Length: 71
Image 1: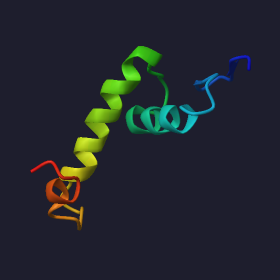
Image 2 (image 1 turned 120 degrees about the horizontal axis):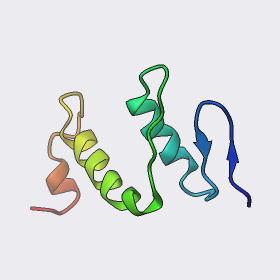
Image 3 (image 1 turned 45 degrees about the horizontal axis):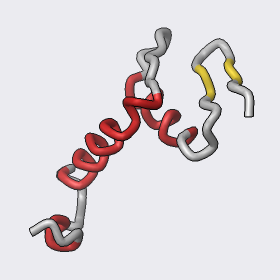
């Protein structure tokens, strides 16, 4: 699948990561500039976002470490 682009941001060529790229671009969007995320960055960014979601104050699964069998 060829890589597509428009004036705002590049659309990834990998079908599995397009949603992830969209989340990352939305997270850092300042209204006029774009950030470049490379495929090699994705595994670490997934870990960072997962940790943020689990430890967020609005997360109702307070015992998430137990639920994921991390403790």
